Length: 53
Image (cartoon, rainbow, N blue to C red):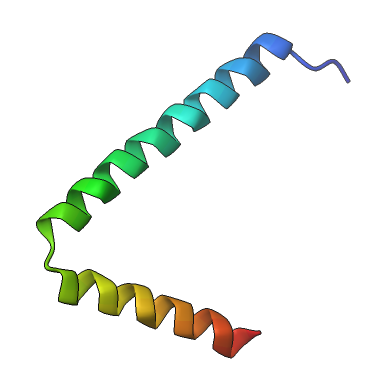
């Protein structure tokens, strides 16, 4: 099996760009959403993680 390093690099760059785009959208959402709303969502998420462990 031969690995195409160029394709691998393109995939890595696309993944990195996608992550940065997500971070930008998330920051905008946090800025536009009242603290009470997003902090409750974070609390609910963190609580659910602790319940599973």
